[in-house]
Image (cartoon, rainbow, N blue to C red; front, side, top):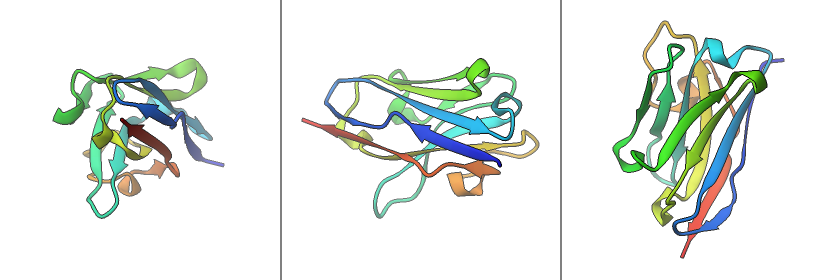
Length: 124
C-alpha cells in the first residue's frame, strides 16, 4: 500500500531544533517532488518547503535560513530540519509527494500522496 508517514514532531523551547521525517512506502520518494506544509487552526495551508526530483529547493520567507529540506534516498525518507524555532512555527506539519509533471499545489491534500501530519509545539 502507498503511504506517507510524518514523524519527529515534539514540544520544544524557543530557539531549539527539530528534525521532521517523511517516510514513504509503496513508491520511491526520490522519484517525486516532495513538499512540507503546515496549517494553523483557522488559517489556510502554508507551503513551507519543497524539493523537486532534480533537487531544486524552495522555502517560504518565514523559514528561510532556519529550515532545510533534504532527502535520504536509502531510507526512502525526506527530512525537514528546523532550527531556531519560534512560537509561530507551532502547528501540525504535513508532507506530500507528487509526480513532477505539474506545479506544487497550495495544500498537502492536493498532492498525489500525503500523510496525517506531526505536531510541533514551540513555547517560551
